[in-house]
Image (cartoon, rainbow, N blue to C red; front, side, top):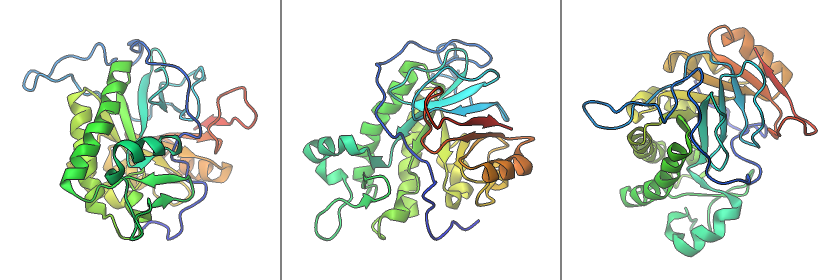
Amino acid sequence: MPQPTVRSPLRRRRVLAALAGGIAAAAGAGLFLSHAAATKSPDKGAPEVVAPTANATFDYQIGGAYTPPAGVEAVSRDRGARPAEGLYNVCYVNAFQAQPDALDRWEDDDPDLLLRDADGDPVMDEDWGEALLDTSTPGKRARLAKIVGDWVDGCAKSGFQAVEPDNLDSYERSGGLLTRADNAAFAKLLADRAHAAGLAIGQKNTTDLLGQGKEIGFDFAVAEECGRYDECADYASAYDDRVFVVEYTAGDFEEACSSVGAKVSVVRRDLGVVPAGRPGHVFRAC
């Protein structure tokens, strides 16, 4: 299904603020098999990868961790947060763009891994003030995979069961300097790294890549605003209903619940995805 020509300002894709706290202990087993309890694959010697259960009640907590509401079985949290004990935990990683507060580090340590325009300036995602990472060559993809891959390994060590690498669609904001194939190739490197660490990996948005998702190595999807764009059934079909749908308005939430809510996890969150107890917090599930 074609993407909208203008990116929605509601398209919530990343953490608004850095989260405090260090690396935490592994999550407990609870309803789902925890990373710590995962068995080694007999043929590859790698930890077993456990994909999320279809239609598991989900909470999207990338803006700040809090005690999940009763009945929630899976959460997504920033890689700097502690996993939720006893639940299926998805680790948010901004993999294709640089967080604003990390731009100086990229400029100091790996300036050539920032995508640059003809004037040598970083190409920016203006909506979020983030510089795009340069996935245009095999060499740069390999170096990026080492950096981001270390974050993925950190997710596994913290006790997450899965990872969602954000901004898979950065090529759409690159002014033609990146291609869909560039980002698909980088995503494949991240999928291999995640699986080697025992993590499932989710496709974040980007219906243009649904047809390549299994080839890349994605195990499930996190789809924002698919109710708004009538895309939810496409994700559900591609990933056997292993989809976490996130909507930000009442109308879009009702649309998603109506179309796929009987078989796919759908949650409504506030655009700021603020923790419970703070002004503006919204949480609803079908």
